[in-house]
Length: 227
Image (cartoon, rainbow, N blue to C red; front, side, top):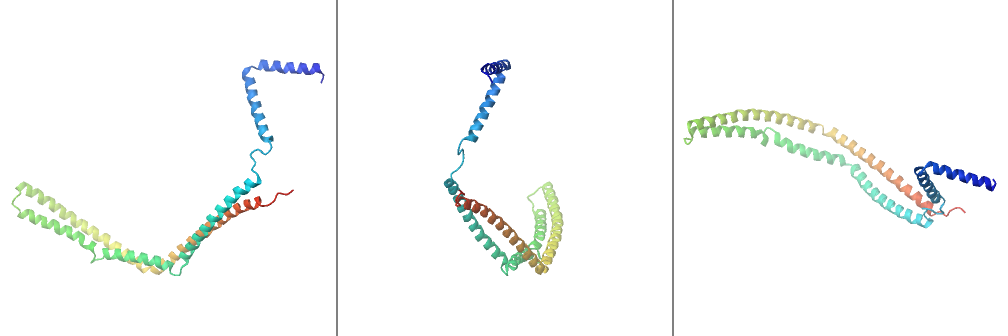
């Protein structure tokens, strides 16, 4: 290109910018600056690149933490497995259930405390009726009202006592049913313990894989680069 041609080309470009207006020029300027900055960052030697020593220090801290955490998880997993694999583990769980059932059954049996609660309310309401009938400090209207209310309480108490008896007897029957299924329940508890063991093993496998990833990164930093 001759000097005359170069001058003419420059003039045409300048004229085009002038006709484009300030807004277009501003956009072009901003875009150009952004592209220049991006290019500078890409081409800048060693931009945001850690040195081998810095990589070593970072991965060393990561692998120490990973191995420490893994050691703790292995210890806890071992304890969890030993707990549920003990020969009498399921039997102990069943014994705890049986103790709860025995306590509940003692409360709702025919000679237990729940069986007498309804009758106590009935007898209390009857005693109050007799007291009101014999008491002379009330007016006829007051006595009539009190007797009516205590009669209502007595009637509702008998219904409530019958309902409590039905509920108590049904509950006691269910408790005795559970007692008769103790052998099967013990086996179900053993299965439940085994399922817990599987979960412990699966979690531990994941923990070991995570520790392996940290260890692989560390090994890379202690391997001299190829010349």
